[in-house]
Length: 104
Image (tube, rainbow, N blue to C red; front, side, top):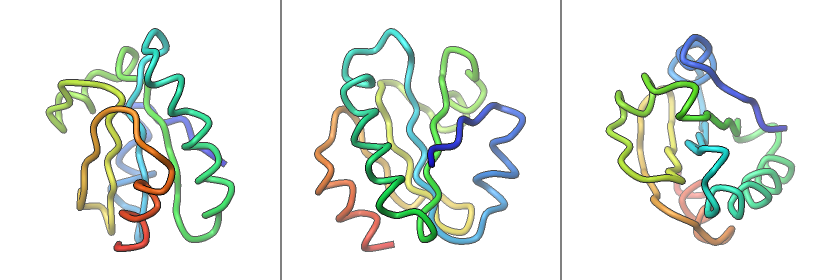
C-alpha cells in the first residue's frame, strides 16, 4: 500500500517512523513521475511489512520539496529511522530502487 502524504502528515508518517520509508516526490503533470508510479506501487506490494512506501505531490505540498531541496522530479528519498540515507533523481528501474532498500 502506498500512503499519500501531506505537509501535515509528513512528520508523523516519515520522520517519526522507525525503520525504512521510501518517499516518492512527484507532480501530476510529470511524465517520468507517471512512468515511475507503477514501479513504486509494485515495490510497496512486495515490501509490505518491511518498508513503508509513500508519495507526496510537490505542487500541493511545497514545504517538503523546499525542505529537502528538491529541484527535479521524480525524486525518491530513502529514510531510515527518520533520516534521509539516500536520494535518487529521475525515472529509476525497480532493481536499482530495491538495491538501495536492501542496503538500508
